[in-house]
Image 1 (cartoon, rainbow, N blue to C red):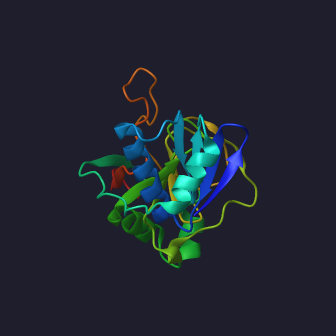
Image 2 (cartoon, rainbow, N blue to C red):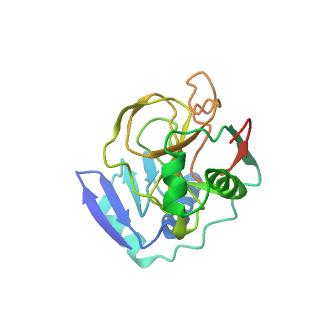
Image 3 (cartoon, rainbow, N blue to C red):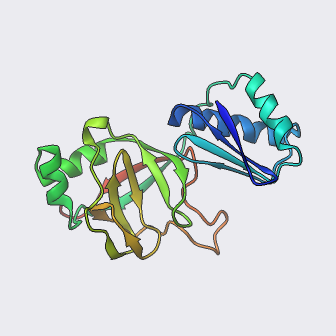
Length: 205
């Protein structure tokens, strides 16, 4: 791993894979909980983990360089099920890219158990992994100026659900009515790193 300074009190730790990022994130959370790491924020991403609010970032960087990170613990048992209508405007394009029918896109997508690798872009937006590499899809050449809340979308290796209306360039394959972000709920985000997710087809596809 490589730890890069960010400002005066933060580190960006780079690793080689999403699984290594998940393992490092889990280990840093464990160290903070036991009191051996004092840090304000621990933010995972695709292949990095940001530590913000460190009193001595250079010391933490040295400690990380010398330490072994154990494998990530088993994922949580509970699975969040998201009812989805596979009715997205890009469903036919994704089917063509995969070389299958639109019905098969829905079947393949719903057969997979996903995991939230990290969160970002908007509050409540999780980057879900689980699709085999052969199902990677490119982003749209021209992003939409507005993607509706609840849109189920694909881009690269990730699946995501837009928690609110916003611009976006992902391929839209479906719609869910599940609320991903609710500031009156504790926690406000339905999805967090490590959450297991399944999409359950409803209606016609």
